[in-house]
Image 1: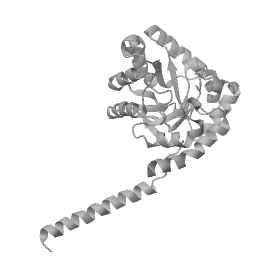
Image 2: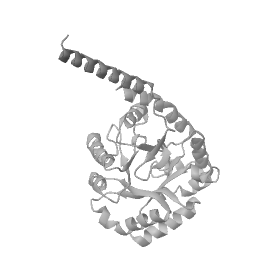
Image 3: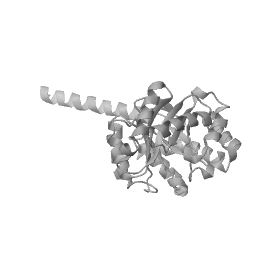
Image 4: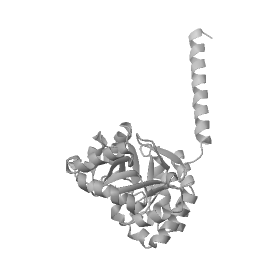
Length: 287
C-alpha cells in the first residue's frame, strides 16, 4: 500500500472510531428529566429543568387550590427535585409561595417573579413588597412582565436601572423580561441589559409571538449572546393537553432553551409531567 493511501485509510478509521465513541456516549447519556439541575444565564442561577408554574390563565387555575393546596403542590414538587418555582405579582400567588417557603430551606429554592413596574419608584416599591409577600430577603429572578412593544427599554428604563442596582446589592440575583411580541423579543435578544428572557414556545405556535421557527431563531440569537432562555406556554396554556408528549419532546429538543415552566393544575398533573419527560427526551434525542 502506498504511503498516501495508508495515511488516508488510517485517518478514516480513526475518524470512524471517534464518531462511534461519540455515538456510544450519547446513547449512554441519561435522558433529560424534570429535576435535572441547570445553570441559567451569565449569573449561573441554579435551578431545575422544569419550573412549577403558578400562572396558568393568569394564576386562576392554581389559585383554585387555595394557599395551603398550592403550597402542598409546590412542596410535592420540591420533594421530587423541582426546586424552581415560577410566580408573578399579577398571578396573585405570592402568598401561596410564601406558605411553601415556610416548609423548605429558602436557599434550596429558586424563585422567579415578575413585575409590571415602569419607573424607578414603582420598581423599588415592588421589590420591597415582593420580598415581604414572599417572606424572603432576596429574589432569585425578577422579570419585567409581558413586554410587548419594541420601545420597552425606553418605557421601563427607570425600572431596569433599579433592577441592575438591586443585583449589585444582592437583593436580586438576576433579571430580565418576559416577552409577549416578536418585536419585543427581537429587542430583548440585542439588549446588553438583558440577562434572562422568558419566551413563549411550543410546536403548534399556540399563544406564541410568531411561528416556532421564527421564535427559535431569536432564541438562538439570545443563547449566542450568553443570555439565559426560559420557555413558557410549553403546553399552550392547556391547549395542547392532548399532545403533551409531542410538546415535551419539542421543548427538550431545543438546544437554545435552558429550561421551561409549566403550570400543573394539581399533583396528578405534575406527577404525570415528571413521569413523561424521560421518554419524551429519549424520543427527542432519537429524532
